[in-house]
Image: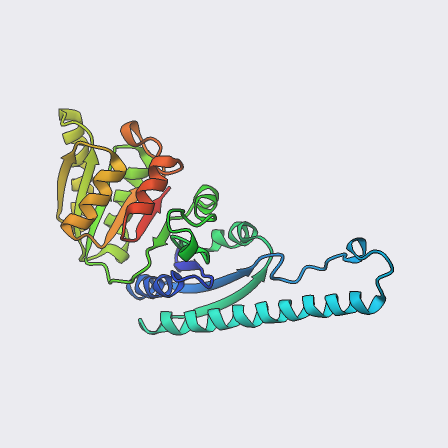
Length: 285
């Protein structure tokens, strides 16, 4: 895409502030424009309700009118809240530089918006969890997997606390999507100048070492010097522990796994890995 654009999907969750900071960081490094979008669900959007069937035993027209007025008030409040979320998000993104930001308040299903807009984006950005984050700490946002399945673009999954990335970990298994992840890091200015490490989970073999060497050479062609490691264990535990122990700020990985991590991404292993990992994740298809 000649002019990169980030489609950032924000809500009222605790992750929105961090997401907007990361979006600003990405835009500042890549020269991308930003489209901040807040989607009101059908209930929030004030879809008309037929209340007549629930009003029985002689209820008067005045009650129906009162309920309709209450519904309109809820819709008005949701619209105002959505605009405030977008205004706050725009201000946060603009803290990172002279970035062109547009805001969109949409009604309906989030996936309809993603389907309509993702073709105009070079990357999607979303928080790890949604508005119920404080009440569902063990669960990922319900929309995350749907978005990863639906889009053909890389997806940036923001964690709760923003920290400017300096050191990135690339999960590599030789599969097509992990090769695309390496290529993205090699050619995208977002990753320029950042320390890189490539890790694969499995047993040491000559073929695996050769695969890692090819991945490292791809990064070298893009100006990166990358360490490589082969570690045994469970992928979600290895990646989560390594990011914590070695101080990585960002995890980049393919959205579909191969061999031992075939269930990465769409599957319980990946869900557990993203849930436990405390840094943002870039998923590449």
